[in-house]
Length: 259
Ligand code: MLT
Image (cartoon, rainbow, N blue to C red):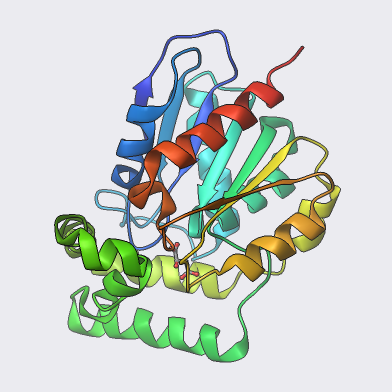
């Protein structure tokens, strides 16, 4: 579990970025480039990422959230604007539940607040077992194509190759841990409903994993949430259209700063 700091300067509340699965902090690099100065920007490499895939507790996103809180506090971050993409969004909601004092504002990017349906859960457990049994990331390689939108897939093969390389560099034990942790997560819609800070929901208009309807459910759940639909982006909107996602995060962060 480690913190990657993109920027340390600025008076605004820190912005903390939580990545999706099966990826790591590098999926936020392009967004970090586009963010305006004025606040520290950190990304967390969640449990299961390369270098963070051994000595882990039992698989649970609650453990991920506790480790995020620990790593932030160790870096002197007591309150932050938290943005999570997909699995990062599940962890962000667990953080709101378990460490509410840390979260001033919340961005939920290409994610959902609900738990898995039984078939999806069973599929995750199968993938976890297969990753362990084969000692490879083969079971998640096919995800590369579903993560990106059709526009990116058709027009930007170099980006598709980069995402595939990130997946190839993951560790089988980490893949298994994360899948089991996600399979065990509860519905956190009520956690979102009770959250009192500003919320922005971001979704790629070509996201087929957590589609626009999932984002609309989040917006209907979180009182006063803002919805940003990103054109020509799939599930990895932050990778595909970083400028649009950075703009949404910058607006949220400004709205979260103390007056
Ligand atoms: C992700 O992008 O983090 C995954 O699609 C999350 C999931 O498998 O639910």
